[in-house]
Image (tube, rainbow, N blue to C red; front, side, top):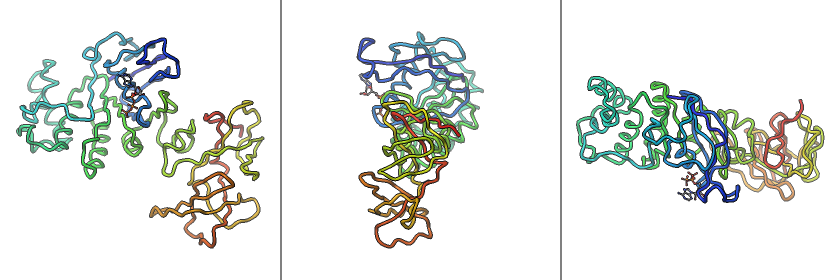
Length: 361
Ligand code: ATP
């Protein structure tokens, strides 16, 4: 396994002279820690697969370098990069047994037989494939075949990294949860650098120590699930992560106050030097604004709908033209549609042109 550094890496399928905005991957510099469990998260078309394929060498970058443990491997082929990749759909040999499939990547590299047998047994055990090791792969279900693909990706202990591209797409929903947790356990047991591409936030947050969020060809934030929840660096992270997503509303901000629709809310930090001409927005997660009876100091709101999610209720409210999601406290009894919104000042963030602004405490 290896530490992976991306240095000013960018990819344009239209060639280097295409407009910078059209690049599938806009220039990015970042480090992927040796032995880390990463998720690459973002909606369809944001550039996740492109970034993964640049790391594995399937795609050559338009500019920039990729370093493995400080060595520039950008010109090297996929084979020479020593990367294992697991795709959406099973890539296995139907005519071979499960055990032969798992052994294949090791056999190919001339690993001695006793070592192959040991490693295959270990991986089969971790993936619950031991009972079917001698069965031909062809007769197995799509789920089991994808488990073999995962096993083939994980069987070599000497790879620089294992890359997963939406590997649970074909897996039955009931099994997904189990396999997701299993992959996390496999990461702990095998101590490999893993990068897992998904557009599903639950998959990303369950699997990864660090989630790398992409939007429109850019890496907008890399952080722990807690960091992404508590301090989204970009408004996109705020509303893409969380359910419901973060409220992001236009505001006028001066010092320790934000004005939304003519009402003032208090801020914990002071914002005296916001960039002039920037689009200023307030971001607050629905968990940190709650509905209460109307009253002084509370933002007046009209309740449009209550969603009961079992453990928690959220109200869909309107403040002037602006829509909000807000928590409904367990002891709040709703009478009529008029309400007041109460904010937790420590959890209210300010964004300028979609980027988080660090206020002064
Ligand atoms: P998905 O989740 O749908 O796979 P993604 O986040 O992995 O999406 P990419 O597949 O990396 O996104 O695509 C990023 C952009 O690059 C998209 O606009 C896509 O249409 C474009 N693109 C991807 N591959 C090619 C290609 N071989 N030639 C031209 N354009 C491409």
